[in-house]
Length: 123
Image 1: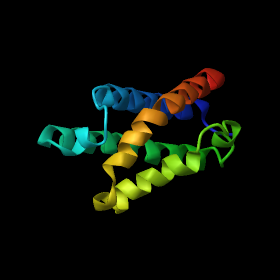
Image 2: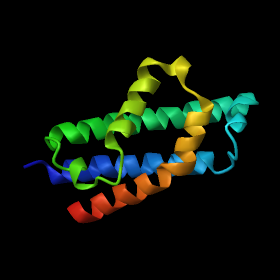
Image 3: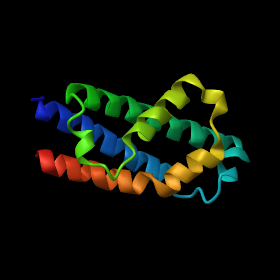
Image 4: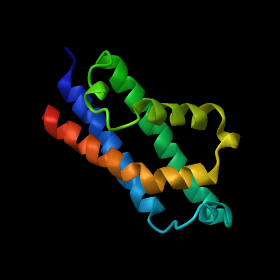
């Protein structure tokens, strides 16, 4: 068994990070919005920092739940979410603005919905 209150707390932090990512990417309509100006580059950097923190938190949840929690929600590519953190942390200069844009546009909302469902299910 795992500490439910700790896991809920971490999930709430992830939910906040996802909300921040959604807010910061709301006016990004194409990958070049990240690369065509210093403000866009700063926005991409700040979004990537949230992705890195989120990936680390997911890795921690997977460890403290002995892999039992994330596997209950197979609709999310948990390995991909955690792996993106590793790319950000270890291969930052290889990050592609197209990839970040695609993740923001296609993966953040379903992930946020699942994180909220997990919080509700554990609550």
